[in-house]
Image (cartoon, rainbow, N blue to C red; front, side, top):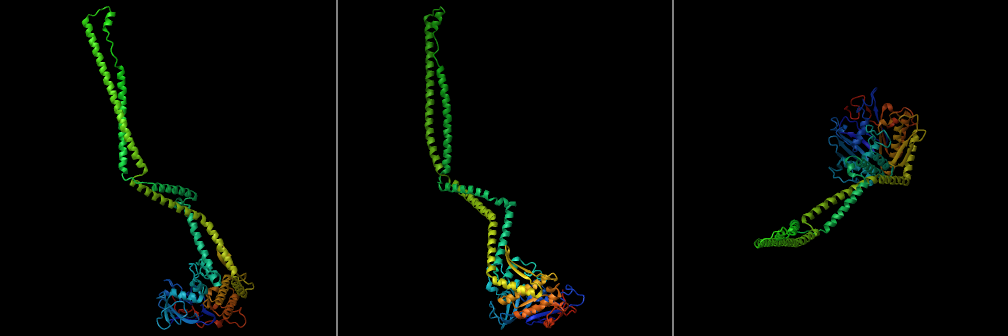
Length: 583
């Protein structure tokens, strides 16, 4: 329980608390509004101060770091771990918490500044409170989605400005679904890790959805492609890799590869030249043979011609004609011999060239055999580089195919995982039926004490995790949600006290009773007092004096018996909690 809250500043109104119901009453001046009296009476600021002392954030906008309060030191005397401990915090140095008292049973070792005086970081302070008040250290888990001390404590002392009075299961309007589920599950006694697993699943589903959306459009759409197309491209590319590897395995490097290529090329040129020369000689032979045919002996029978003409030649002319005829025959014979010699010479040249061609062709065949059996080192290097490039391309295609397949199959897999998680949650609720019934019955009894018809707490499993629904049926009541919150918080407090997961007090700001029928407010105060006494916890309520019910209480119950000695008012500059007015 909280025993005392005070400050080193003389204007602050110290608050002394007792077991059971404590009503911090504020006298509201006539005509003022909640907004006008902000930081005037200080009821809401009291709740903020409780959070400040128990590890709440103190960012630069915090009232405790304002010029008006930053030099003030606030102190709380509170029961922690079975001992009375004093904790102090100031806006000048909000990251450090001063502790006085016996802390030998605390979960963290700390070197004392003086005897029984210590200084904790705010993070360590929250760790200690989470362990000793909520047993968080015993439930520690590697999951990043687990209940935190600050989330649990925000149900112990709800804050209006954070939206703490909008829904029973929610202490702030910005609270994540997983945090709501894990926090309530933890306090009731269900397996809170299931809520964390649902959140992990939601994150995976969101990422998968975004990836599928991206993969279907834009540059990534062209990059990923379709599974069928990628599988075809991968098969072709992989086959090319195998062929290149086989070619490289069988490759034999020929050191003089370039020289042999040049020699083969030179031989081919020589063979071509010899072929041209053979063609020329073949043409020459044809021409010579044609000339040889045309070289016939002339007809020199002049005597016969003269005789046929009736002329008898004398002996001298006749002998001269025979000599000429003999000369011409000699010339023709010599010509024919020359042509035969030229033909023979041309044929011999062709034969020689053919022999050279055969030799050259044999050498070229030998060279080509060497070239075909291996290759140049440069070519081998090029093959290796090409293999590396194709292998990289193949691996990229394989990864793209795997990614595309995962994108196509992820939704099915996640749906299966969600179904499995729902079954796990269902089994957990069934296996912990005693705990579930305890919470349901507790809420039903509390709501029945306020209304003719009992309300209901429903704990169910859904495809999105555990669901906690609170219902109170009353057509005549205003502020029905507030009373749902009242019963829900009281139920959590009672369960927490029984199972050792509660700090020993519950705080409700006056906003809880806004719009609530006066009779329900009276019943709530009386019920809170009764349950606090029987449950061994402290119920602290802040109220305006004009909101205290005048009737509706059972006989013998006087709410003013629970009003704290320090009363607040917004009527004067010094009447508020801090004794000063500030913006």
